[in-house]
Image 1: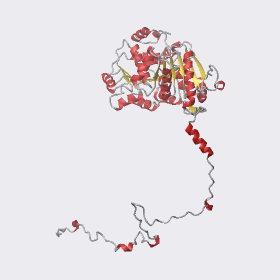
Image 2 (image 1 turned 90 degrees about the vertical axis):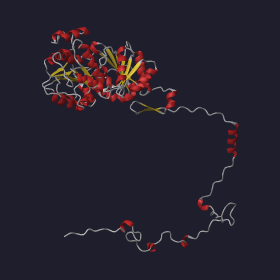
Image 3 (image 1 turned 90 degrees about the horizontal axis):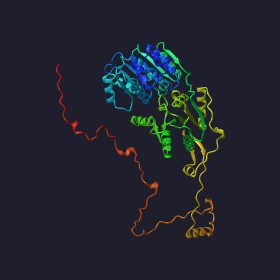
Image 4 (image 1 turned 30 degrees about the vertical axis):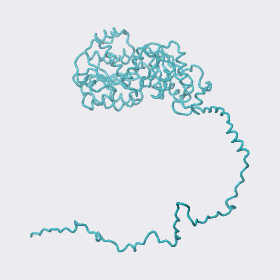
Length: 505
């Protein structure tokens, strides 16, 4: 099947032909005709199969008629991350060269003023993350009453990031008669409930079983110890990888992204980093540098695991096994895209075995070990620097890995002559006689007071015995009669004469 058989407009077909595509992917071939007909579509396909073009191309064809009004966009596309939203905007700019459409991008980390200006001019296509879009709506800068097409992309990622309540709120704000295009790579029960509530008689398109990996990706497992040995294993894999053009290294935590990035840079690898705590210009700069070939390795968190279209990624390394098995499918989907071959290697420690079993149960496939397994792995060799730093190492989750012996203390300096004489005197000193027990000791003598004080001192007064002293607290009877009111101290304001008005009968 060719793109010319799908019913797209002439302008869209010319843009697709100029991009070099002639044959649609399975998800595109099945979803585009129903999207052009105005039907709700539920698309389930592996990552990297062209889901973005499956809704961009029919939207361009339908938006050729009509114009947008100020603050009232015609279509709305929801994306879980800023990078995916920016990527969809690039797709509209790529395929909409011959369309005079206004595309507005609402994402965090960008000035409100610039985004508001685009909305006020009238946006035919609004691409947004849920949080920023609701912020504009609650400020009264955006109206959703004119939405004709609603696209929810990477819905399972929306679930992982906690956007489902926002999605439910947005679906209630848009018109009931809109067309909904729903795309996801996996279908957890929560996503299924969402589709049943907000899709009207949808066409279910499933080109592959949910949560399956592409056959063009060669997968493998690498056994390693934790801590510094794990980073050394990653560096060894990068050096020994055959046909390595560029690679993405995934970590579970943002802190580990920074540690691995610094380690690679220290050892001479051209690497960049990408995670959620970076500001938007820095994130886009790292991504652009990786796409342009300025850096060969991108160390990132799962913020880059969904939907990023970088066709020439040859290798994916999971520095950490993902705690959610669905993330494994999306991570390795960054390679082997559009029919190309790719390699995905996962470093496994003892603590990652439980996650490995969950991943294999999800993809219904056993991943082969590359090299020795964990039980066949030799014990780690620690350098003198590692031994001197700490008595134990910890892995990435903070658990104790092993106890490292303390280094031997250096030999003491030669004793000086004074120290030697002092030690010899200490050895020849006669032993001290043991003291008798307290009961056998004689009573302690009390020294008599001096009759004549020393120079500059006065004779202390002789104190009477305690029995002869007056009591410290006096009885209440000695205080005299009890005082009533103010007593003799009457305030002056009470002595002022008071005028009383006569009563008139």
